[in-house]
Image 1 (cartoon, rainbow, N blue to C red):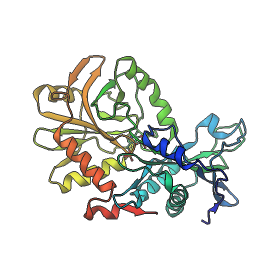
Image 2 (image 1 turned 90 degrees about the vertical axis):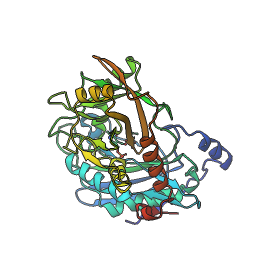
Image 3 (image 1 turned 180 degrees about the vertical axis):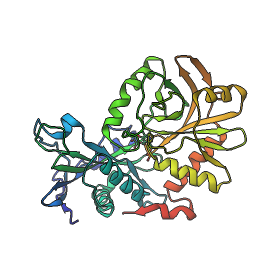
Image 4 (image 1 turned 45 degrees about the vertical axis):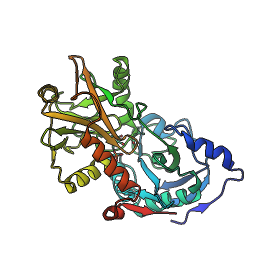
Length: 358
Ligand code: PLP
Ligand code: COI
């Protein structure tokens, strides 16, 4: 794909940009440019552009506004110690985006085009990649844009990539999270879209997030939709349990949870460090009793935005309990550091995970 680049005529001045990069937060600040591309049955993917970031003008009947045919991805560009900029495992996001497209009956974007779009945008907005713990979050997304009311797949699609300098996604920052295990709401059912990264999954999780906040918790944890028994994941992160023999346990990819790239990376890093990992179902009852007996030592959430976030306390309609003393544990800290080092190019044997772009 030949992306036509039109540079912003009055980009954010350097001083203002530097200020924004100090404490970027999450989801508030956008770079000066964006990627757009279109799909029609006649032309396929075409009209790839990098332009100044600007609002869309879409028909009020646009498919996405009514039937939510939308998917997205989330990955980051990091600045390494040497000042180079690298994407972390973008081919995994490209593959997941193609799988999400298939599940939502959308035309898949060839992975090389997906990756090229990200590379070009990061090159154009390279000054926006922060240093240190912050990074540039890339949000590729695609939506059906047919001006037609009727529940069939759209015949027009727009692909777009936004770039955002970000710090912590979880507001708790470094404080251990208090999570709410919802027994009211399910996020995804067998045969549904739980394994796809589609906007609808996030909309379906919002009532549970509100329920969590109403009970003084940071985030909701979902159980399976059939037995309301097996722990699945958070609305925006996967979950790991650390047992007292050093084993890591995480729910299996049975089709209802998102196959996290951070999850896959942690499984590889932990296994290489000699920590056994088991992908198996874990019941909420078991979670409570293992926390009580001391068999369970640590719990953490993980994701691109979340990074590795310790979970210190668990609440539900049937009461609350702590994980050990409620503080972040040593294995969580070790995993967090191993992930951070791999993302920043500090681990020689993991350099193949980085795709240097600028
Ligand atoms: N599960 C959900 C529902 C998510 O939104 C995310 C996104 O971060 C994850 C898990 C973790 O996925 P990844 O590690 O690819 O970011
Ligand atoms: C991510 O971390 O990439 C996520 O998808 C979470 C999100 C809702 C910002």
